[in-house]
Image 1 (cartoon, rainbow, N blue to C red):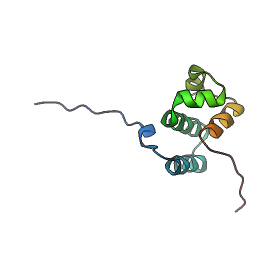
Image 2 (image 1 turned 90 degrees about the vertical axis):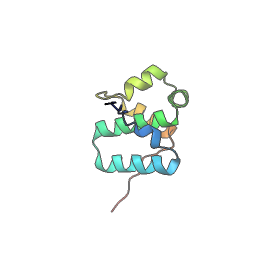
Image 3 (image 1 turned 180 degrees about the horizontal axis):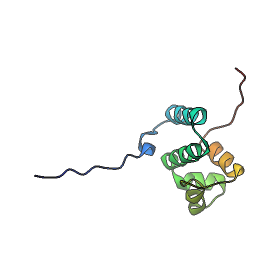
Length: 95
């Protein structure tokens, strides 16, 4: 009997356009914790191209990977740089 391989799911492969990226980030910002947000930014940076995001943020690729890896504690400035580089922004709304 032949065995079938199972590939690892990578959400970055499905973040194909700005609308999908915005929906993903907004959902994580509303429902997630700080670690979820950092992970989501890593997925979006990977989808957009880590080299491109590194260039736009002024960070090296290794520093960017490290800042967005699971368990990391990046500075808020780094989070803002990455968020802006992927086309995002922070807004406060009243309900």
